[in-house]
Image (cartoon, rainbow, N blue to C red; front, side, top):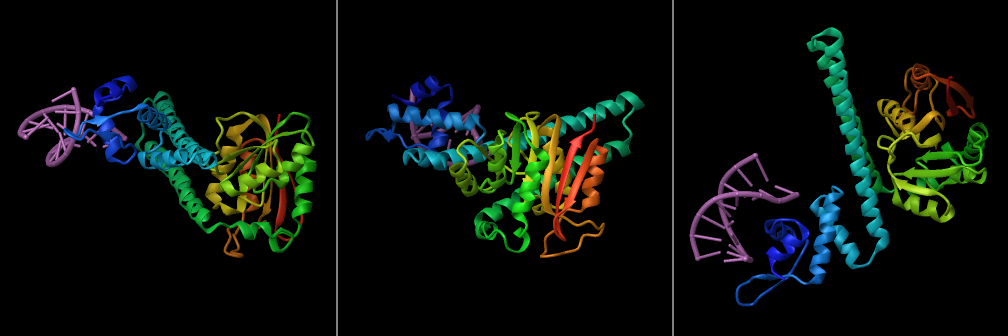
Length: 331
DNA sequence: TTTCTCACA
DNA sequence: TGTGAGAA
């Protein structure tokens, strides 16, 4: 099969086929005499996968890696790449959504004021720029975390910050008290200790974590659990599908601005009456005290967000830092 | 027809 | 991440 034929068959240009070869994604045999490429069935299949992955928005360099895993029939690794791809597309989708919202605001301004005041535009632009930067900062950070693998620190439960771990989980479960068949989401699920307890009570749980190693363990411990790669600022769901969101000992990894963004994200994936329960190390004072160089959530800031967004709050302090915060929409 | 290279967006 | 033109 010559290049034109395979290109026609797959609805791409011959030029693109050569381009993929140049990038090392493909290596068709070449005829001795004239250097014409000859494509066999296997090349067709490979090219088809390239096109599909491209369709999923995957960059060529990543497709190359993914193809290698397919060659090795390494399903697990391939799945990881696909999930990683989904998180990337998810954050792009969120960005687009945000741009649309900004545009809508401008349209609304134009309608009410019959003009676009420069100041308002400027504010809108600034706000959306800020949002983007918050998301980006997170990405940088969690790529770093993945290399460093904070595994051990987390596993050492019942010491230091994790001393009242069990008690905290128990209280979350008690407050959320899921009814049979409710959809729940655990963000920063780790190895799924919290999600596991909620499953026992009949909830149908999904777990999001940024570490695939965690998710792997999580899946092993709780086969009924749905696990997805993702993070607080770009939850891998289209929205409006959970009855409750929980998170334990993860929220404090975000900056204050990111925490508020994360709350928006939680609300996005929740059903209208969806509730939120957080267990974490938090400050009650207004001024953040730098302890262990972590920027712990500041209670009043979270309170304000919940109040502004129509939630009723219940909270309990377990030790000098550890708090449980439970928020239910009013109405 | 095909290949390769250079330039371009 | 591709595409178009031109020479071989």
